[in-house]
Length: 373
Image 1 (spheres, rainbow, N blue to C red):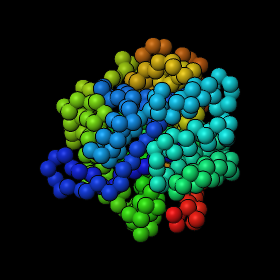
Image 2: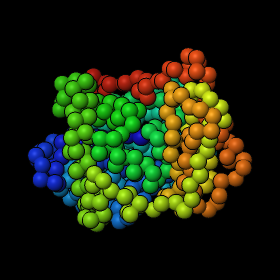
Image 3: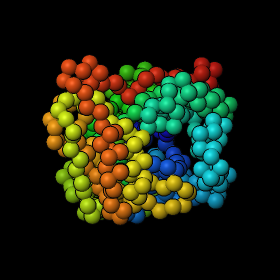
């Protein structure tokens, strides 16, 4: 689950048309507990990116760039920083009140006027069914609304992966490719829905459809990429490093850490890809070093996996379907077996295999009385 504010307009750093700043989007995020790294871990795979910023620094970045992504500090949401570390140790990771307090406390500290929450459900999510996720979403919306924040939510499916990559450096690469207009359809669906809803809520778009279009145009047209480049440099990344990552044709591994080893798994039979169990994939990658089981543990930014097939795709036996990036430890036979079982291949006439679900299951708009503030 995550909350996102998505910028639609941005100054272009390459001498193209200037897009005026219309909204400021701060984000106080967290680190991963269980499975792969969190937002901060992924960003820290970029050399020089600093997620530790003071309140004054955050204001300066917002004034200059319009957006930033930071973590808690001893002075910024300090109680949540402590509770976040204790939730795993006390088996309260899935506690609705603690989840609500953790998320909304950070959003309250950001002094938001509008908030869009991405609440996930499915095999690879904390909540397995739509109803449980909806219960959390409504609790979050009520808490946000009580602080005067117009809060909406998107309920999205997470049975498998979002996009094709899992891991820290790999997800940064996929995010950059998406900002360059090469993003996978499911990720673009989620980005345009969340961003479009935010624009509608802040009266920057007359409706969700127009909001989606504006977000799509910002991504495809390069404005979003330029904004991310500006945010990187404002948060400590060297100018040349940021330019290299945002260049049209670049070797990402000239900047980001690449794992020492890769291993490709093969499909066991002919058929059509029904899906991949994202939870199994995340659990194995955590064991290989992509995530942590306790707060404070180090992670290996280079460890991850690339999905080489898509749901609904016809495959032949022996085709590569997953590329694992690893170092130490090496994937063991039991882990390889688990990963192979995570792939479901149906028969060519399997109607289930032919049905590919969209990620967005339901949209919950802000309560009307909050929208009118």
